Amino acid sequence: MTDQSVTPETRCSFVAVIGAPNAGKSTLMNTLVGSKVSIVSPKVQTTRTMVRGIAIQDQTQIIFIDTPGIFAPKERLEKAMVAAAWQGRDEADIVMLIVDASRKKIDADTRAIVERLAQVKGDMPCILVLNKFDEAKKDVLVKMAAELNEKIDFDATFMISALHADGTQDVMNWLVKHSPVGVWHYPEDQINDMPERLLAAEITREKLFRALYQELPYALTVETEKWEDFDNGDIMISQIIYVARETHKAIVLGKGGAQIKKIGEEARRELCELMECTVHLKLFVKVDEKWLEDKERYEVWGLDFNAK
Ligand code: GDP
Ligand code: MG
Image 1 (cartoon, rainbow, N blue to C red):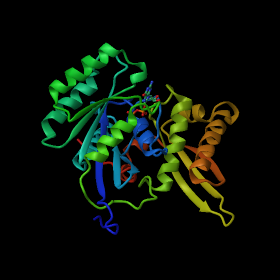
Image 2 (cartoon, rainbow, N blue to C red):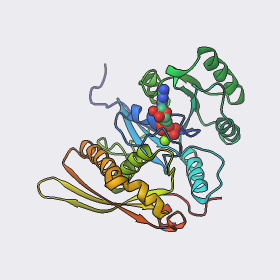
Image 3 (cartoon, rainbow, N blue to C red):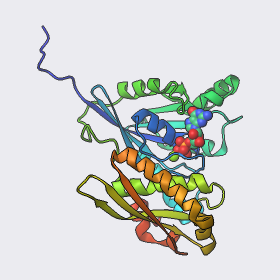
């Protein structure tokens, strides 16, 4: 006889998503969560801080820690980003290494990550996800999988396309199956724990990255300065785009302000979709030569200003 009143046990796990810049970490996380919580761009180093996406399947809650790409840090901001990435691993129950398999061979960043991971992993479950299957050569895939598994005895290896959501459900099923029994960490309706203001700023920053492309890689930052909720449900958001030079300001504004207008419109549209209401977005551009050395900014992003 089965007791109908007994609810099946819940499971919960933190999954650290690590990998070289541009491997597709944010894309995969967004696909798995089914909602856009971490910004994606073709440019490296888009993910500046840890973003959590939360996916629920049956009785299991999985919290993804989408870490900044791990690379050899030189500047202060880079160091803080790398420190945050490894901190993500420390908090996790499962580590998921994402590798861009569309390359001819394993890239140097991935090699460095694997070396470090091999040292620190202990008995933590680790899975290997070879991404960009859609653009990869089959023989390269097989070789990469074998070579990486020689360095670390991965608990599972997947070949997927995060972009086309191909094979991603298998990854999810594995994670669910291997999540420890435990209570859920977040309420059911929550998909990320990023403050709204920060998320809104990240969306604008993503549009800037996409529009400006090679011109000002990460010499700019966006901050939400004001957020007003109106009685009719509309939201008014004011943001400041900080750049380091007057010349950068001119690039961001574009001819007759055309560039910033286009960026603002794209960001506004996405915010409307996300918030499910009418959003009014005001963007201002300010020159501040020192923004990269401002300690408070690092705290807002959850980064360590003094990271080595
Ligand atoms: P991250 O730096 O690891 O977070 O990488 P992103 O998720 O930002 O993705 C970097 C780039 O790779 C973006 O242009 C994505 O659209 C692209 N990308 C991600 N997954 C796939 C995939 O499965 N196939 C292909 N062809 N491109 C992908
Ligand atoms: Mg990313």
